[in-house]
Length: 203
Image (tube, helix red, strand yellow):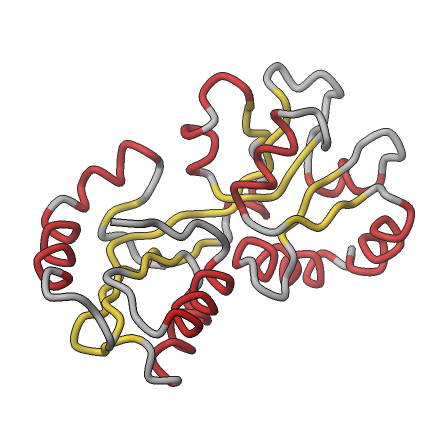
């Protein structure tokens, strides 16, 4: 078995390039639906297993005292990592939130001067904080668990209110054991709760 890691859009593109696969797991509804529409994913094996939410994360201990997403973006001493909205679900959702908050122009300016960095996946946004390449990141809450002791969440109600469905689906072109794998994952989806997924939750 081989794995392809990346943003929902990237992995879907890889599925198209390779022509087949055994399981597609996505936090990006729009990319999962695109997979259905383009005939890459099988609608008979397409399930939402739960929800995750956006989170504003910082280095452990919050050394710069970031209090909210607005605070992080309006300060000159804070570098913020955001997913590239072209193919990263967390970036798509973050950008929609920024528009609601009236911060999109601020972000565009900060992308130009290095105050905001666009990254290629939600996990990379978290890694940027862990590695000291960014002071804060908008990513998914699961990374507060997956990164261990390296990060903390700064709870911002506006950020935390944004949810995304976790989709498990089978490609149309798949191997002989794919359906068994699909059923196994669905049957053990309760495990996702250990990492911050709201299993069975409404998005």
